[in-house]
Image: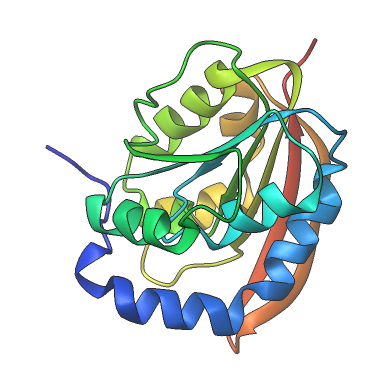
Length: 195
């Protein structure tokens, strides 16, 4: 049974909301990533490709890949790209079973993904992200600090140490950013996979 929330039914609303609200969040993620030229980058839960496009434009890359569970979101991302941004590829896939090789990426990004995952999928997702990172790679993420009504989600965001270590990560940077909604501040993290 799939325990991951698929937002494809509301992708038009999502895209408008994301364009209006996530620009500053994306700016912060890109700055935190400390990108170094030709790096392989993955955007997990890429939605309609807003962050992936920004990453491809930020500097020269070997490639940016975006993956999302929703075929509709991926189609919207592909339509957004057209032919004007080179080195961006999208595909349908789930964060709990990423369709990529072990150690393929230098940097993995996610933006407001974990509140869409339920139960043990949070742990599986962190392990999959770690698996796809090269040794010394970085996982750069932004998540809601608290998500009402989901105890596991709140616990993970407030007390992530055990889950982060179990997935093989170390916390390099973590801080609370400004809210994009009145009650949900954003937590930014850069996690590293030991070399």
